[in-house]
Image (cartoon, rainbow, N blue to C red; front, side):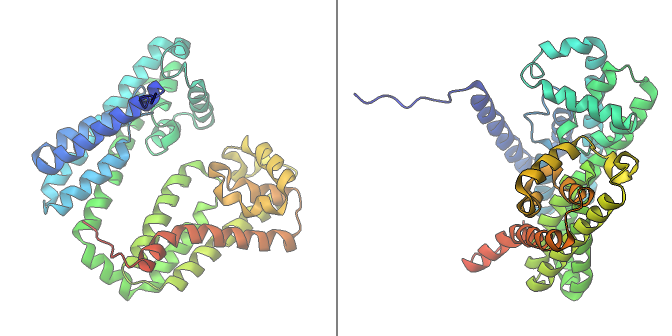
Length: 360
């Protein structure tokens, strides 16, 4: 006898499907009702910044998509700036409520969902807050993994209200503008941007070189922004008719140069790593990188670019542990080539299969 196919086996799967359906509904609604862009931006930003919803809510991606839809619909900037203001207000309110929740419940939050299922999120937030203090509130809006945890921790630690709200308001509005405006202007001025890149390919490639180098630094707040800019910038450069070999060389050598900088820094500061500014960012990842490198050796350097936030600590440890340069440099070069191949692969595949890219 044939059995019926079971539905989602876990509550989280069902919840994810529900969130996905809501996201599709909101994006479709904004596409057809542009006058509601500001209220929707407020709601999305609030949910992205509120402690109980941020874990499940892809608010940043939705705001980027909505801004692109508005631009594709031919709306003017006069429609966009109210959406940015509304998103800033929503982000501010989400952080403020999260702060008061942390201040009221304190350690009892460990018994409340989702923290009782994911207690490590509070641990990460506490480590981040203890390391950067009041600055963590400002940085939190831009750093996805702890975005909505930081205000909760600030409340748990009874951070003074005025410094918290100043950092909260300023960073929320900067975050809102940084998320919404680029997609809008990219779509609105697509022809001018493509013309500029086509006429200044070496300048654009130099920018990609600098981004690749920044992406290698062990500064957590730079990881996702530089990765997004590298991926999006590479596609934009190639769609605009940029030279693929030039972009490839810029990405590879920018990555290798960043690796060498971290490697030499590790050599120079191996006796006092905590005094080096490079090691002050997530220095607790150094032991993990050392264990990884001890296990895999040169292959650890090669695959280090795919280790997420720990990617930059491998070259530092290689320098601290005096890995010979004749081993490190070729491994870094291979790693840089692999990373750059991943970045340009979508465009190459599209060109190979003859699919023409279409922006809104």
